[in-house]
Picture 1 (cartoon, helix red, strand yellow):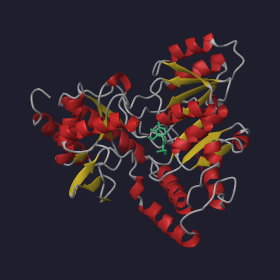
Picture 2 (cartoon, helix red, strand yellow):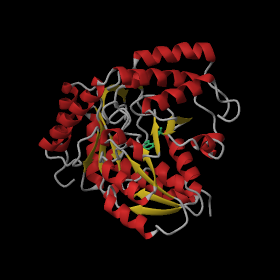
Picture 3 (tube, protein in one colour):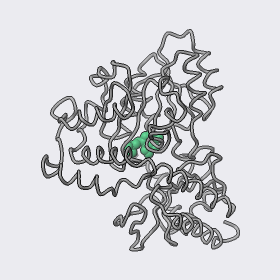
Picture 4 (tube, helix red, strand yellow):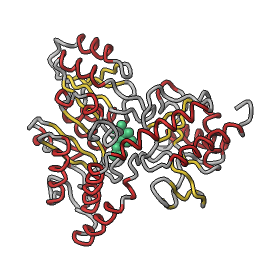
Length: 398
Ligand code: PMP
């Protein structure tokens, strides 16, 4: 038996995907971003509708300038972890800025959003504790449950009543109970019913952590996310998020009013045993945060675009999630249909994400799209038109 035998199934599946559509969907290369909304793919200018770059800030001139200035002054990396030589004054400044943005007392900055979830959840919920997870949770949340060894109890997606029932069943057990929800779910664009989730938390005394990865900079009067939008920030114990989407850079964070967050630093392996963020990334992140604060109209434009894109797709007969958010999951019936459509879209100049079961909720293939504040109405309409053309060109039995 070879150590590689376990990969053969995936290898075969990949070959089938490639045979069905002509491309390996996991090897698309953006040769060069031309702007926040257009990239060069296969030598063609392609509309980007799958980059999570909700506010277009990866191309912010202010962030680019800040990164250049900082890299010249400080070099390109820290070469160490936060608890060794990897904490520079910039890391502390960024933590203070994020805490201030959220109006919370404490903040930890991680090297990625994945590590923020992995670290926070595995450190808070250990052996003997209970981790209550939404069935559609992100991989980083599931991976955290393995690292921390808490007992996992899954509740039905976005169902506070099911959560309440499951928490009541374990109410006399001695272990701590940590509930984890996401602001906007990354595949479907569903928004968590945050008010109701907060009510369950208050009633049961559980600890509540919200991953605002896709909702930071997107929801709430000041872009703090779903907890702000629902007016329940005081009920949330830990807010986790990432800089890799609306802020346009890379890195993760956790904010909290619990002073124990500073003790987490000394127990949290994905924080302790990895190199810290490079200085230029921090400078670009702080500039991105300034842009987010200074331009609330970006969020309004983003939501207007989301409404326009949803309506356009529905008009041409495509099924999307019920809730309108910048994450748009186009639901398809069969895998061959999804593969062919995704390939046609790319050939016609539109890039979206192909998401296949078992990685999708309800085992439906999805064409996952993300809308941006910097898309023009013409680009939104053109994307819908490309969807229409691609659908028309599919064989009738697809
Ligand atoms: N949480 C969710 C819900 C996500 O979708 C992602 C990224 N896809 C992450 C966390 C991890 O973020 P990062 O890319 O910064 O590691």
